[in-house]
Length: 499
Ligand code: SF4
Ligand code: SF4
Image (cartoon, rainbow, N blue to C red; front, side):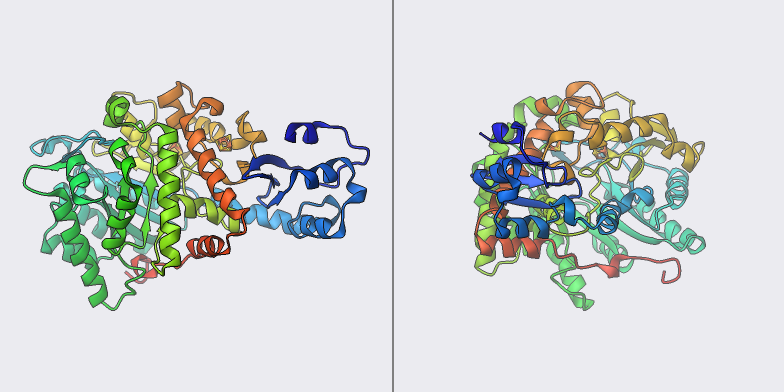
């Protein structure tokens, strides 16, 4: 029926701006190129497409209000909105991932980062490589940068983490950028001295929580004890320190990430409860991806997309129910899409934007000085494929990196206007594709979205969210609006003058 409506010749010229359509939850979703959306019944759509002169005033008003009527479009206002949504394009790389070691004290079933044993100090980044990486990061045209410490386990090479923080703050006096630091750690090597340095230097800490203790410890083996116990102990201690400093406890907390595997899917409520019990205000229910070691073990532990989507929907339904009971917690994947759908802004999440952030939004610096388009390109290199290397610290200049031919190719490949399936997809204004994922799973940077697990998951997520938005469930819609409220965490930001 829908294809008949959208293809049938109309007597009158269409009054609509260009639209893409998709049936969602018993209605028809229409989106326009600058991200407005509206839900119509099939009868309403048929009327608009075939007999627009007979449209009732109420329908016409709804379409006008949502900027779907060509005759009432304010071109300057639309241009300003498109510019606002894509303002990340004029910034340059803001995220700089520094892999300070491959050594790790835990063994995870899904390890993406291709860890090394704890005695492999030859995989530690040197002070010199750290400094040259910071020099490149500060050369970015972005007014603000994030330096994110990754591994392996970055606490295993803490002297270099510490040096990079101090060096970056000192060097930034000449640049005056807004800098913040994030450390991604399993927390098992944390001690009071390291914690004090991180808190005093305003380094955000992010860890992994894979659910209740039994599941976490099954997925993440720590020879010296319970990986979950260590993570929880330090989450609590660090949160107490933030509170003691007078920081808003709803804003300043250790962030935790979930890695979804087959084991995770059985009990979505238990996963959500484990986060709520820890006092987390947000969780990120990511699917497992095919990089690093996960590429080799994926068939065993990888999650079928449908099973993942079932898990996701049940978990988010439960989170929404908790919201109604006054428990304030949100899901980040949803909040990224909802920010695009419900607000004039884009969250600039580098994996879901067009074009993606590879080389133009982020750069990854490996322990050995090799530079990659992004952390996922670096992870693929750990399996022996250096396709995404774009230079080496010490010899590469900033402009060599961002103008590298691989970066150019990825910018084109992740531009949704150049993706055959995306150009006609109703979710194009909110979506993004990943050339590293395409390359790893389909053998080309462009990939083929109709056969892509990435596309399948993104489509399923947006179907779920729009299904809720097009319903009359006001409590859910209120929750979604709360999930997109951005509260700046200014405490973490160092400026050239304040540090
Ligand atoms: S290539 Fe993929 S992982 Fe890298 S920035 Fe783009 S979307 Fe993200
Ligand atoms: S990746 Fe899939 S869901 Fe996203 S815009 Fe492209 S076709 Fe649509």
